[in-house]
Length: 406
Image (cartoon, rainbow, N blue to C red; front, side):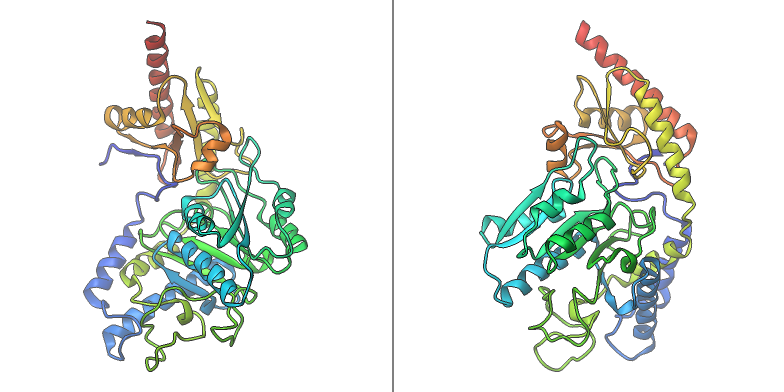
């Protein structure tokens, strides 16, 4: 694996810091009790690790308190917890169906498929706002799609396909004017760890978090932040604006058949991925915000190099402004998945080809059937890696051109 050029960090970061594996091994060796499920030493050690990870996430996003960070099994889990919870709570509160929900064509399938299942049952009236040709969603377009009855607005912080960063602060302000009662759910899968996020300053109601991408942790780790507006202190289950769809043991308030009402236990059922959070905690302790500057410099080099190759189309912003270190492109005359396969098999370069779990994004930019090739540099990527990729793309493009003219 030493000669592998890994350019699929938008899917999951690699390589992880060595301390991630060491922390997970140490946890399994010395602390692998069930967190919150017992008073013995191993259980206490496991609980300490989980709570320290929660604290670090809370600090990173400037949550008002760590209890408002609910640990999940990933960002998709967090998004499902939020979407199911908001819709179920609205129904319990007597909201007439279909419940108005607004989202964008840039969303990941974790959002789109979850909302689609409600829309097909006519429980949700779903409005999907289209981005412009560069993958930018205008705040007023979202506001125009809202009504006073809108209960939920779901927006990604950055497109996982094109890398376009969305104006979250402006979107939230516009939503507040148009739909004061709506909760705003922000998907930070592609941004947290790259771009600072302050949930209080931005007035975010719900924030879904991935532990294995920009934060550098292991897969199977994530979190959902809930504001006071989304889940008030001391509220009952009947009052909560996010209803717990997942039921089970929490380690607190064991007697009785009802879930606890206080966060985080109100939404945390079952045993946490404690070994994963041991790894995430180690990753966050080594997180270096300056690595993003390195990644963006490489992204600029990649954008410039691709623009110089004939028959290559780049999607999204043409510069590094308002984008993450993600570049989506296609080579004329050859399927994106085939390009990715050639890069893998013949050049030992790992990229991703296809629709990237964001089908409506690709429909909006005109490559819905085949998608595109996505290259995403990481902290370990070098200039030489980018240059090697560019040379390989140039050869593939030239070969495709020759095949068409033969």
